[in-house]
Length: 201
Image (tube, rainbow, N blue to C red; front, side, top):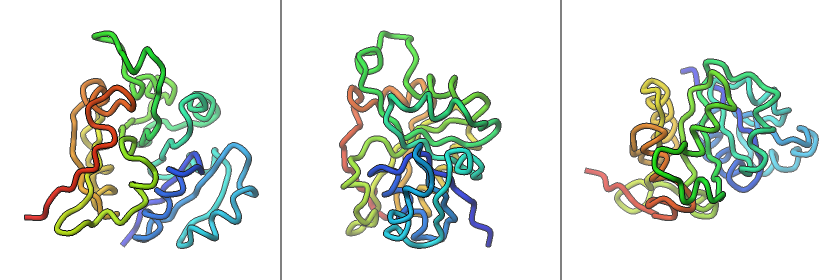
């Protein structure tokens, strides 16, 4: 069975943790940072599985692309790549006042990411848990750790939900980037740091 190729832009704690989960169930992963693939050789040895290191442009060739960089680096990371028609999973957190204490009707940070990543189908996910919690086994006792996601494209959300479930988490759809993104804001939203388990029936 074909397992999609997944690109990860950002090789910090969150990007590395996601790579481990994804390679662990057989996804082909290409991880990148702005310094180039040569700086990630030791990291990909530690991650293991079907993973390669490459440039941001190479990671952008994935079927699905994760944006897992610091907020202040996000616009630059997206500026030299084309994600037209691709699913972009936005893992960033903007701790700026205009997003934390957003005025009614103002854009969420993921809506801003959508403007930067022209033509991409942006889904917000994997941003509400600390890296050390995200790194733990998502299958806990009689359930699965919850990952919240939101987006404006239902087909893209279905794909992301499939990825979330395949690596052992339980996905919870919060609706659109505007409504769901408010709940996911970290800091400022009501859901970040909640380590919830969805019990199996």
